Image 1 (cartoon, rainbow, N blue to C red):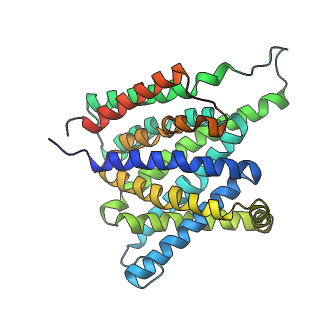
Image 2 (cartoon, one colour):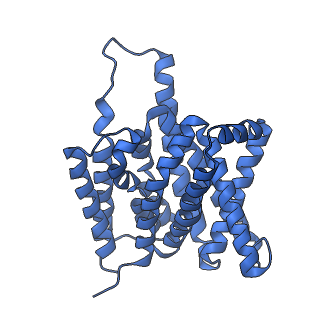
Image 3 (spheres, rainbow, N blue to C red):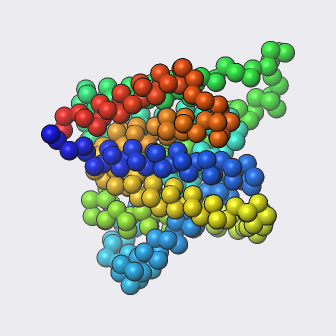
Length: 308
């Protein structure tokens, strides 16, 4: 019996880790700020990878990496981790978690198109079917509440529609950023090991976020808010999971599997969130959600068990 593909399994594991840690960052985002939470978790992860580099190589930065690869990985981190996650969290705040995740589900399509044109990645009919089935399950689940909470008093004013429009644009931007960051990292992964590549991406993302926060004088207010709400300990735990373990798993997946397939499996986060529905205010899974889970997991099974 053939072993399950490592790249696809890594993406699936990353999605499960992100599902769990999202509970932590959802709470922190409401209490402080989504971008503050992203800055905190990137900073913690960058420190962890720097310490790991010192242990492995005796230097704070991974040695022996070409300048061109460092530049590409840095841009990948800025686009995928700094910009992409910030846009995603902003989308969550403006249009809700489920719609934000629905918009993020565009990433596999963007990644597949980009992978075809940039790297000549060709997906056979079975792989394309798996992507479509998995995405259909995700869309089915998170679009359930799309018609809820509508105001029947008349057409909303621009001030009422503006957050939804901005949130939608942020969600599309997050999908494009995730796909772009994933495609950028694939080239250097031929020459750079996964841990070093993740380290460089995190350093670049952290640098951009800290400079931006410092420029807007937000670092001290954020720090005070984290301490006031006693979030530091739980955020460190969440950062270790989401930005150390999950990002490393994502990097492994992007190095071993086609971009479209990796991004599809990473987009199953809302499926793994369903068991925690009561914790995030969504209640127990409905019949529609259970059907969506089965559809999405069928797509995942097709991707994992497809012929090489």
